[in-house]
Length: 135
Image (cartoon, rainbow, N blue to C red):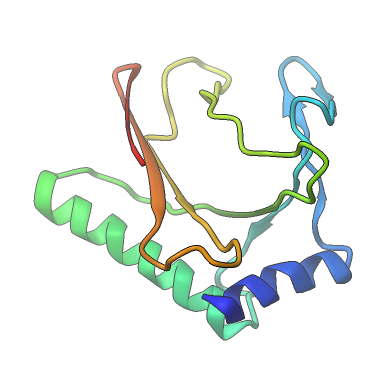
């Protein structure tokens, strides 16, 4: 977990992490609502072994869900986010996409904070607009 944390923080040093934005009809940034720095991880281009291991674990969760409950998930998208302090934090929200309906069906947060146990996770699952969560 520590190696993955260092790798994600290293993305900030490489100027890969950018201030997060919100989207609607246009895109905007508002740091009092969303103060994190983010980037999307491309698992095929990711050079860091620690990050690749987390992506592989997420891929395995997808395969398990597809097998166990016929989840029919085709794609895993991985986003790294750093909350640099000063009130920046994760705010639970519902994503909205053009065309309506929930397109993201499950979100898994893997916390890399110092002192956080590797088993700590949060997930949000969306099905027919119902939100279930576990912390």
